[in-house]
Length: 288
Image (cartoon, rainbow, N blue to C red):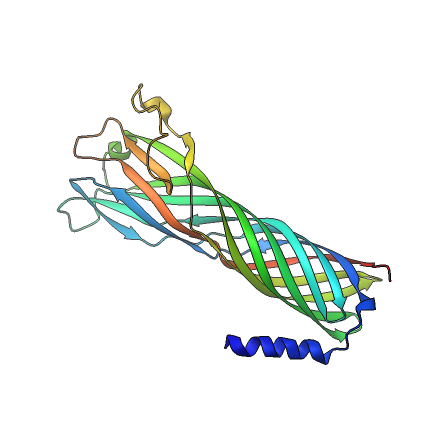
């Protein structure tokens, strides 16, 4: 399939008369939302001895804010290149662990842990644009490119759920540590944009964009301890807990001997998904 794409794009370019004197600059400002795509590849590292556990798939996030600012060079009426940056966020829930007393066949007297990770992501990206006029005041742009994504990921909520009349001391007798990590990766994007001329060189646009990218390398560091008062001087530092990919760590403090620490790690934070944006493009004619 790929070997046919490049000849088609080249043919479309050659079909259009090249006129470098028509070079123009545009400033593009976009605001919108990103959909709840993506997922987490995670694992629970624990040995609870007398307890068994099951797992259920994590949930997708809701809609998040998406901002963008681009400088576009229109080197030909049908060809443009842009350099852009922006900001968007993504929240993803990992796999939920349901803990069941050993030997029980039914999920009775159990509790669950549901982790959520939040991220702030800044992309720096290059985009190639093919423009096709529909009417004097309407044009369609097909775009695709590559980006470098800078992200900050942090352990957010670790929701606890209880059923029946279980004593919640199993998790209450632990210190819950949260971790965070910076990450970066290369990703790709493609989309379609519709421009509507407003006045002169000003356009209103709507666009949809799909990104394909994920963070896979982490160097997590301690963010916070959520219930330090419980420790009574025990386990007051979490600096050496977990691994570089740990984002939640429940450290045993007063639990029974057969109960162990709970270490939640991730190996992949995939933030692929669609964005839907609107905004303005303002054109500036370059000197001949």
